Length: 388
Image (cartoon, rainbow, N blue to C red; front, top):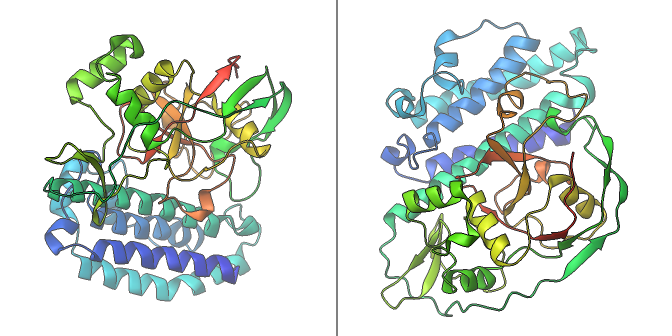
């Protein structure tokens, strides 16, 4: 067992516990957003995943049907989880017991089954670190939703957010062959296999769209001008009543500010905009006489050093989430395969809450187009459109 990887795993476990403990007990077990499970469910789910893969699959421990029903994603419906999830103290005791046993269980498995694919190149530790990091990000989403519910609308920003002209510096990729994907042990199955693609020339914005640029779209009646919106986008916009990014609020002085997990914050003019669903991202792109990048364009541009400010917000791509040729599900079918359904859109990059372990050029995030609580923004692209 790699000591540095185990230390990172322990740090991630501790961070989840601290997040769950950061709010009053009642808020730990309720749904803070309609799409998100309670904080305590995430804490219990992380434990279940470790026990499933390290305990059951490697060490041969008995399967716990009760825990599986509660903490498997396909177990209880999200709306049922709040009433069934254990208290923080119970989960903390379970975690303490498990963490005391984990190193010995893993060491025994490594001695008895050194050729097991879950152990090759410390795959299991890398998998758990990334899995837990993704749930930590989701817990942050829930905490922002909580802060939005508690916001009073009285925050007075020191600096008024003002709109700015749409001025983007585009970097050209000249076209030809490039390589995307990743076969290293920390990559997920949907990043594999690494393969060559041939793309026509394109130009991609050096930086993501800023708060000030997005405000210009809003001031130019972007949310109400139907020519910027697809049919599905108009339906979502009208149903949601959207007029600004998810975490933006306007006070009694008509000044915009943001809300983070700790409450109201200043909106920095040149910071990347966040809180957009795919419909909003596409509408802005049409407004700016541009388009969203295909994820292959995004990855090649990232690998060639053409992109700046990656990692402040996830960046919507134009294409649906799809399997690469030669895809093989590993270590289980449920991580990627159910979402190759034509309904999920790819995002690239990372958010400010993303784990370091997933901050790589090949990492693929995916959501349905109406999700805007996921710390997502937009980067523009021009010229030829590739195919995969």
